[in-house]
Length: 365
Image (cartoon, rainbow, N blue to C red; front, side, top):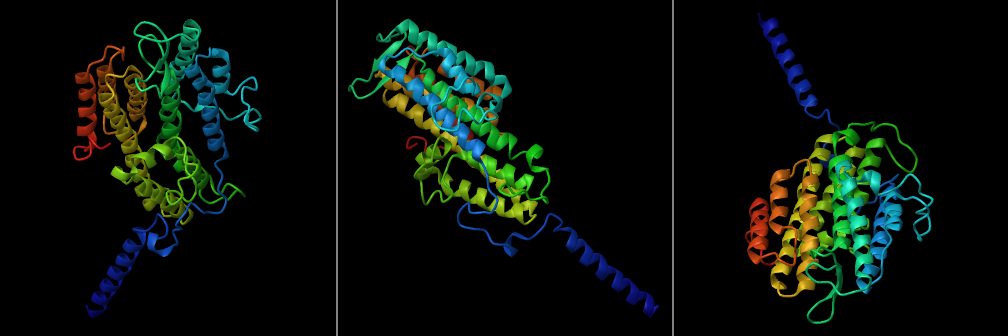
């Protein structure tokens, strides 16, 4: 009997050891490996993402000349969107034939953006350098004379719908819904390709590339573009800069050390904080529209930006609002920014504030 008892104790000890070992099948404990202070890793490449940011930057620059009364050509913009017919002036973009904005846009939105481009070009041709007003496309100058924007006949600024819209339907969508999702994360993490790392590491780097910040962000904010720029703009109230950057850095280190539990925790942080940046930026522009309500140029410009950041909220797998709820907010903004009421704007703002817990900072955003 004594021997049987000893054998039982031994078996329990082996079971306990095995159970503890099974708890860490995802890889190293995060405390056992080094996490750098910047996005400084071996074999990192997100050239394609940088090129797409460059493409949107050049498309936006081309569109903005309409603010000075210039007519814009739809085919030129469509070529930039699809990277066809050598549409770009920046070196290397035309040669990057496999890189484009169109095929990385949410598929159901591609026709929407092609339509925005055609509508914008047609409106500039109709305006032919003229002044805009309700029912008439054209440029509108702010009351103080410092700003000038091109609007369609309903007061929508297509430059913002396209630029900020593609930030959401392309960059944000790809970052949080594609590259940080199972299709790109449940892949090989053993075979290292020189300059790119493993497939999983490379996909993580590509998600980081869509955020548009330098490797030592937020200590260094120079060169932060698109989402990085807007995260920095809201950082004083949200504190998202460090949260997002630290999560990208920690998640990359976790992948390299086969610590997939920690990787998944960082994905959740990135998705949540990136979504907050979009929602808070929408509230920011709704606040500006209310403050400048009597100024057609300021109101229509900021409402167009708000529209795009609200629309982006559809593309997070863990989004706080359903797509019908997001469409309801957009419906509050209506179809004519010249005739919108402050009640409409405040209703849209209130829904966002409640959904994202912005009550304490809603008027400071």
